[in-house]
Image (cartoon, rainbow, N blue to C red; front, side, top):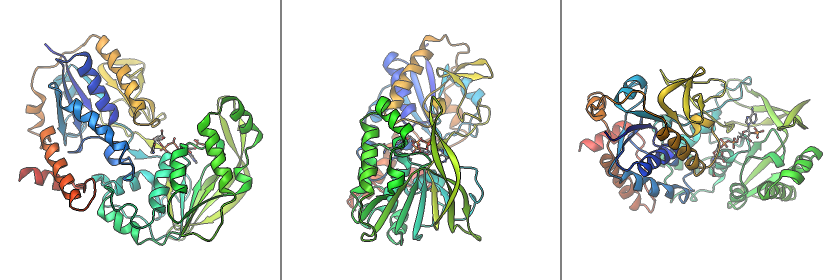
Length: 445
Ligand code: NAP
């Protein structure tokens, strides 16, 4: 019998895994499940609306979906509509591609004050992810703090700093567009706990902010200066990307202040230690750091010198985290599904026929394309591993169809066409459906 595989999660790592199985074994049957009726994971719900080019990767995923062995089973949630044990009975092998859907927090006092948000929630909100549509964000803030110096921090800063009109022709939600248009934001303080050499953003993302209409990127000379430890690292290991970041930050020291619509302050060597306010956020207290060489990492060391930055909204962009799924092994410290090269472990023992790819396997790092090689390697390993318990032979659709309205690829194509048509009328790539019931309702028509 041809091999049957369930891939749980239809983001990039899931699609790359499905493609790899069908490339190696064209007669295999691969079902890609997703808890949402819509596919593509972070490509749809994470990639910024003004980065449409990045989203063209879905064309390749569409080619995979067109292969004869492929099926999409949307609106099916592992742990809710089906247990892992059941799934393993229905398929020969299961690949978890469940990503890292939540935002990390800092664990400092005041983090739960109104006005403090995770970037993950904000990104999901402006991108129309159904989980985040009921949230409210404090976009009328005069001073906004963004914690973190990665590309998510840059995305959030760019969206917050965009001039009215700039996002009108994107697929950002109407609600976000309206709320962002009416804000009174004047300053965004982006906080990095280490120095410019350790900034995690790529130069292109920072340059995009500097190029925004009416925006001045600023930095303090003392923070832009490269310390001796980082200078030594830069000379020995640094690449073009790190040097470009250092140069950009050095250039920002000389920016003219107080003349533009908005200032984006890139702050370095500061760690938030508390969010302050009476009933809502009024300031963030930061502690200054110095940098020390710990051998495998240049780490920050607190100095006991503090500063308060007044702000009315804060966004934590300090990374994503995976969440445990009932019945699925989870390493809470590492925030991943424990695995040996993608083969899932329960304690030190392997779980037969179960594999993991993407951010759930290795943690939340890397660009979309990095997931490809990772998924291919895990699939190669899976295909070389004998199946321990073969599937029952029952069609999973028969089982799952009795528990939820399974959204097929043909259904998704209808939703897609609806969104694109709604966008065309307004010069936008699409107007997203943001509510699961509305999506299912549309499919019943
Ligand atoms: P990231 O690249 O890992 O950046 C996280 C940032 O948070 C780092 O600056 C990190 O500083 C900081 N941080 C972590 N813990 C902290 C703490 N306790 N206190 C203060 N700061 C802390 O993660 P990300 O921005 O979430 O992005 C995830 C992945 O998606 C990355 O690979 C990114 O490149 C990719 N991505 C790409 C794009 C794009 O290409 N446009 C857009 C979005 C995301 P340290 O370095 O000191 O740890």
